[in-house]
Amino acid sequence: MPKRHTIRRIKPKIKSKSKSKSRSRSRSLRIAAPRDFPDPAEAHAQGVALVTACEEQDTDTALDIIEKNVKQEVLADLNVTNDKGDTPLLIASWEGLTDIVKALLDSKQVAINATNNEGATALIQACTNGYVEVALALLAEPGIDVNAVDKFGTALKEVDRIIKMYNNGHRNGPAKDAPMRVVRAKLLQLGATKEKI
Image 1: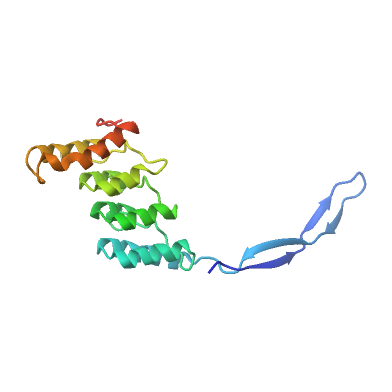
Image 2: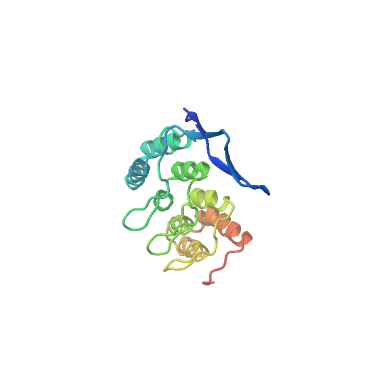
């Protein structure tokens, strides 16, 4: 349910400048102010609940918090971090929770290039674990940093590592590397490099 606004009347004193003596006059202004301001402590608590839901892979709870936040029924800080510096987007990307990642991106309230304590972004997290759908959803976002670097390297370097593992007989063989090659092509299309910039 959208927030209702109340109208307050304020009578500020405005001084007019004239060649003669300056005199004060008052004029009524109409200013709309929100009836209820968001409580920062509540927004943080909801953000922490979202982090916990992502860590526990509780998709239903996480999606419920995000949906209520978008509808402004509950205000949550969608960029709150855990002790490792992971935001809900980073955690969901690491765990391959595609529905949560897409809901967070759709909310337009998350920092898509946020980094954790190791310097990893959501894109690097998804590529490290081979989550193709998550990586492609992140790559579709305007402003995604395809050349972000964590302590192990870039997203492209991680994708190449996964493809190499497929080709060396790990992860069900070379036939399974096609989706990662799609991610690799998209990274290259967006200007990704393996080297630290």
